[in-house]
Length: 358
Image (cartoon, rainbow, N blue to C red; front, side):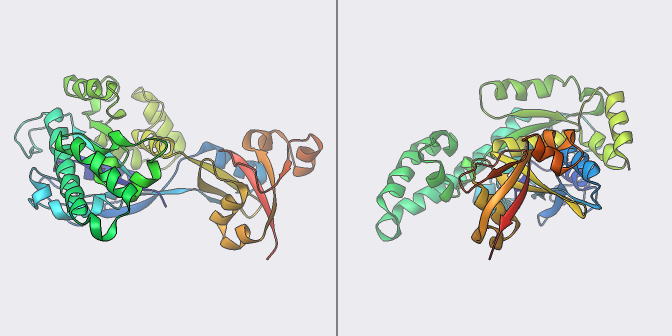
């Protein structure tokens, strides 16, 4: 299950955003620091129009989307790497997520106190990233001190190359390459995790941004991290609407094509190299998340280990072609439904029927 951690300084709007994402009140969104003590988490359906269309075409009785777990992690303050505020809890919780959504405050509101007393998004970003760097630096130094006991030579060399980066205030992810990607991931360092910036702006600035968000976007242009505009208050309003038609109408009124939450989810999937394939039938239409590049037996194993163990073949058709024909007989007649073996690399949007025997 993909886990996405929402982080930020206290009172930047991340808990309000979490409430909107989950359409719940699990996370308190009160006007004081540390209102979120333990990480709140919830499973959120991944929005995918393809699944709805496929279910309608097949007359499926039930729709089961893919899910992503969002975790609202307690606010961080300067000195967290040394235990200040809720630092130790923050750092332990953030280690457990796959990707980080860093919410930064880009709005003025005299009724919502800022932990530092002024709005300065770049300084806020620096605080959190500095604390993550310091936490990683301490971790790397400790591991290198014990290298003779429990580390192989490759791991030792990797840590030795990461150490000067951290000492110079840089993120450890700068060392990641296609050759060492998996090895670096095993180190579980905070600054190797993929992340994005979310500029939380006032409702009136959600389409154009403001002077504060422009500074963050300028930083992002240098390849530092992807950046998105969002208004947590608008997302909260959208979450209260009951139908997709109402949501689309509301978004259109304020000049948006899709919600900020949808953008966040798409970023998470794109960054982690994930896709979805579908199993479609009269009983249910189901979306399954997979890592791009996997072969059909491994994709079958996502449903059940027996499917992978007894894999025989897979009937595959693209979701676009599935919608063009009234039934599977026509799909096969037109050569759109293929029979693939163990070496087939599953593609995003495939509709698959696995054949297996155990």
